[in-house]
Amino acid sequence: AAEEAPAQLPTGIPQTPEEARAVLERIRADRLVDCDVEGASVDVQQSASSMRRSLCAAVERLATDLYADECHCLWELLQNADDNTYAAADSGLVPHFEISVQADPDFGPYVLTTNNEVGLSAKDVTAICDINASPK
Image 1 (tube, rainbow, N blue to C red):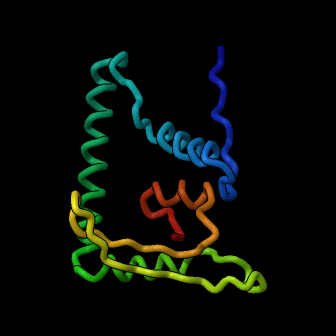
Image 2: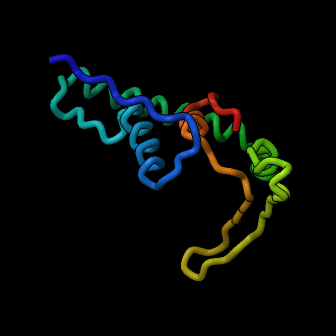
């Protein structure tokens, strides 16, 4: 029996937690996250392990090079907020972005950012999870 093609996800903004979860589950499946290769041949298992190590090393190197400047992450946050999609001008909502440093007694300090963008579409989330494919 032929395998059924995975259902195509909508590209718009998920309207329910279930729709958002489906987007994430599809991304995980596309990237073979949680894929059990134990039943595969030794060659396939070794190849999958090797590809994962190479990809992780490449992403780590990219992140190290990209964020070598300590302030680069702040620039990225501001640029991302500028790239967001906000409500239509006639809605009366003014685009808003806030950044603050918070402290949690159990976990210590952290940076919190908030904004009032309309939300990420399934297409945006999929692109963010890919390397060099995101307009965000």
